[in-house]
Length: 613
Ligand SMILES: *[C@@H]1O[C@H](CO)[C@@H](O)[C@H](O)[C@H]1NC(C)=O
Ligand SMILES: *[C@@H]1O[C@H](CO)[C@@H](O)[C@H](O)[C@H]1NC(C)=O
Ligand SMILES: *[C@@H]1O[C@H](CO)[C@@H](O)[C@H](O)[C@H]1NC(C)=O
Ligand SMILES: *[C@@H]1O[C@H](CO)[C@@H](O)[C@H](O)[C@H]1NC(C)=O
Ligand SMILES: *[C@@H]1O[C@H](CO)[C@@H](O)[C@H](O)[C@H]1NC(C)=O
Ligand SMILES: *[C@@H]1O[C@H](CO)[C@@H](O)[C@H](O)[C@H]1NC(C)=O
Ligand SMILES: *[C@@H]1O[C@H](CO)[C@@H](O)[C@H](O)[C@H]1NC(C)=O
Ligand SMILES: *[C@@H]1O[C@H](CO)[C@@H](O)[C@H](O)[C@H]1NC(C)=O
Ligand SMILES: *[C@@H]1O[C@H](CO)[C@@H](O)[C@H](O)[C@H]1NC(C)=O
Ligand SMILES: *[C@@H]1O[C@H](CO)[C@@H](O)[C@H](O)[C@H]1NC(C)=O
Ligand SMILES: *[C@@H]1O[C@H](CO)[C@@H](O)[C@H](O)[C@H]1NC(C)=O
Ligand SMILES: *[C@@H]1O[C@H](CO)[C@@H](O)[C@H](O)[C@H]1NC(C)=O
Image 1: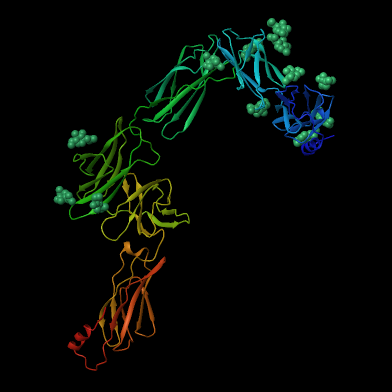
Image 2: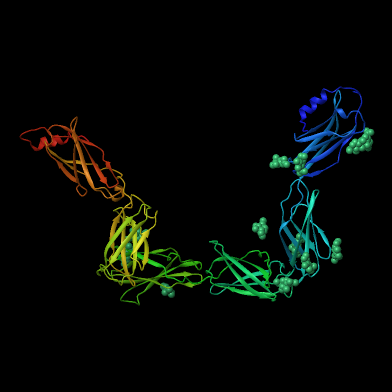
């Protein structure tokens, strides 16, 4: 019979009540602390006095139980399928008041499961440390201990899944049968396993790791044998190194150290003047499974090296009377890393025909302006760093009277939706395999500040997104190069994206007659037009009259409107268009002259003063 709490209490409350004044004693037995989850639990409540058993009742925090009277002084309760983590059981007697006889609190749990994934490490002559995994019941303390073949037993700390034997014994070469016991209040589990102490040797990290930068550039790296490596054990090591700047890491395995006390290794193939960090670990080389931990990282910088490549040199030639100003600019080839501390650049120049007449100058910047005569010159630039100097970059500046060859027959230019601009060109002479692209924002006034790019073995170049700005007119030149000579460029003007002009034209009235007016306006500057002007539209109308439109070509800056009404006020404005939009100028007004058959100069002059703007 399964009784539920409420009916149970009602039943007792309805029983006859007597002997109110007695105080009853008793207890619940047995005194369990833990029981297995899912089991049935049977408890007895025994009173010291007889005669009250009819009034005894159980209170539990579950409704799945069966209770039964046993004899005059005892009652039994069986709790079915215990699933809660804890259960509280109370036994009371209901007289005029309720008397609590006893209360017990019991935790549920499971016996330990067999430990899994046991692995052991042998620190030679120090300890064997085994670790394992098992599903831990958080409610019940579990103890673990290891037993070695000589029956020495090591208790493990209650809350870790690893355990060590401290043993000064030399176990090398031995097969050890080890037993791992796990125990809690509900049961125990054991796993027996065999380990070969030699295979599980683990050593400390090697000692005294040092880096010595040497030529080429490389490091001579040395370190000492780990102290815990058994003397007769052959040792090999692994080395890892990392470039601090870019974080790239590399690993070298199988550095055989044998039984040597110390080893040094030349690590080559490194970049000059670059910081690296290095660490090393070791392992026995006869079937051992555990690597040592890594040493602390040691950091060093490789030696400097003279620059390996010449710079890329380019120029802009300015023309003035009698002398020429040549703006030189140069940069490292893309992808070439610095191999030392740049001290400067030496620029040397001489007339092509008088090689003894040379001059030189050193700068720390990437540009220099030379004032040279009109004759041809040879210019050379050398990059000097802390370790030496680069090969020379050489460029010939032609004489002003030399005519450059036209080698490029066409250039195509286009911009993709992803804003990359690609130039493709064709040459008529296949010997030309090097090209220089230069580009600058062209404002129409003053010089422009060029950027340049060398292109080799290709007749195509893509300018990455973000380098060219939208709405700016670029002057882009492609120069073919043969040795140190640049031939005639192909020049093109280009917008990667066009927009409406910044301003519209502001026309002026040039000539006013009875039925005609001549308007004039200024061309838009390249830095105001946001695109190539495609047309101008002249929009005019008499006050309160019909609007008329005349469209003219982009190279027309003057226009005469005819067939106007005499003595009439007109308003007019001009719209400039590009393929990206259109912008209107400010409207102005004029008043056509009254129709006078015999106009004279004075009248005309008076009429001009009627002009309204
Ligand atoms: C618990 O008792 C119930 C009812 O008597 C029985 O069916 C069940 O098998 C028991 N469970 C266990 C684990 O003994
Ligand atoms: C109740 O009985 C138990 C043993 O049966 C005894 O140890 C205990 O002292 C008794 N309690 C009282 C209050 O008499
Ligand atoms: C009543 O039953 C309990 C449990 O079986 C036992 O310990 C106790 O001695 C019995 N008492 C009497 C008076 O028979
Ligand atoms: C015990 O309770 C659990 C969870 O409520 C249930 O899955 C299981 O079937 C029950 N077992 C018995 C024997 O009633
Ligand atoms: C334990 O070992 C088994 C089989 O060897 C493996 O699949 C499992 O991933 C290991 N568990 C852990 C936690 O390492
Ligand atoms: C075992 O010995 C090694 C080497 O002396 C030591 O580093 C490690 O801490 C020791 N393990 C334990 C659990 O004491
Ligand atoms: C270890 O103990 C077991 C059982 O307790 C016993 O049979 C065995 O002989 C003992 N071994 C050693 C080496 O003492
Ligand atoms: C280790 O145990 C295995 C099986 O339990 C047994 O065959 C072997 O002889 C034992 N080895 C040692 C060294 O006690
Ligand atoms: C233990 O392992 C080592 C290395 O793998 C091996 O040389 C040795 O023979 C093994 N010892 C035993 C007793 O199997
Ligand atoms: C050369 O550079 C100077 C200074 O940067 C500049 O003023 C001048 O306009 C440039 N000349 C040419 C032709 O680009
Ligand atoms: C540059 O010229 C100076 C004299 O003006 C000379 O001493 C020096 O050697 C020259 N440097 C080079 C690299 O030619
Ligand atoms: C260039 O040099 C010539 C001759 O020395 C000199 O007359 C001229 O002023 C110089 N030009 C500039 C811009 O320095």
